[in-house]
Image (cartoon, rainbow over all chains, first blue to last red):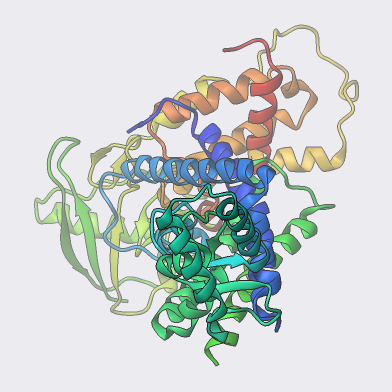
Length: 286
Length: 251
Ligand code: SF4
Ligand code: FES
């Protein structure tokens, strides 16, 4: 059964190429995640999230990345279906010959990762795009600037009575912000719901961002989530253990001079990356 | 030795198959697997029953005709041997042995354990050869070939086309076979001339016939009686990429 009339090798190459891009992104994501462990009340982590959320180059890459994820999954499903139908009658007895665990269960570990991605999107990505409500943060400097701007407008008599009252209320509210809504360095308001954003920053204030730091810490404190997270990264390790060697094979890279390098990169990805990610829930949980 | 055999019986390509249980006794440990089946068949013929059909020819591991899926493994539990070279001493007394034919869409069952492997011939016909016009005898050393290349080509050429790679692969992929057949030529100067068209034609035939795609699991290499290396598959992929991107002859 052929779902699309492209050579089986071309499909593999496409799968590998999209996978390669995802591989390049992983260390970047890990680097940002690890900032959460720095004992600075989330300063670095929020700065990194801010950069990733606002930089235009990152935004372009985000689109490319999403396309890669989509194509990687679609091609993998097509290949799996086609391969399944290459053996319509299955064997009754089957022994797993000397093959690696990762290679045998690629589609399953991939499936687990894809399911986690959905959860991950609900928790973070959709919040970032305003589709789901989360927790927010705003720089005090920006809130002040916004307030000043409005205060000037008020002096010039440009504000309606309603807006004036709101501004006065905001002035009082912000002076009463509790300490848990303020970060260590007192530079940002944090852990705000949408309502609190309106209360402290004013109705029309738009320069707030999702507070991924608070949201992440809250998630990792949840034992069930953390355990799911750890299991997913075991699956990711298995997936990656096969991914890189397989990628090299598919692209026809096999030579005794650089094969050890491929094995090194494969092991690095399969072990170091998942462990890097797994440290975070472990550190936060305990 | 005594065995309980669970054998796939199927009257012809269209009939529905089933597993038939046979008990067999008095088998010498030095009996080969196919001889054991011969003994079973004689007893069946004596009882006016249809013997179990299976493919075989040389019975010395060189022709690639035999091929049974024994207890979940292509060519049985030994590595580096064909079914005809497998001996009953590899099994324990009283063991149940399940015998199935190669199962893959491009290898339809003809009868019982015999499958039609002409799909492999069709792949070979697409380019598994070099076109030579016979002329005067060329001096043996006129084309220098490095020992390393010659060895690799010889290793690839040792593929006997048995189809165990397809049978063992979870995707019923023929990549190991095709890669061996592509490599045995492309490594040598004489084969290089048609290398680009060869690889494209053979791969496209392989796909057309309905073999699965390779997912780099390497069950083929583990089960191949001639220990053909997966390195050949990497070479096939490489040749395919180069041919697709640089050849002007085809497509
Ligand atoms: S590659 Fe090995 S298993 Fe496949 S047909 Fe050739 S000899 Fe048989
Ligand atoms: S009968 Fe020839 S290889 Fe087994």
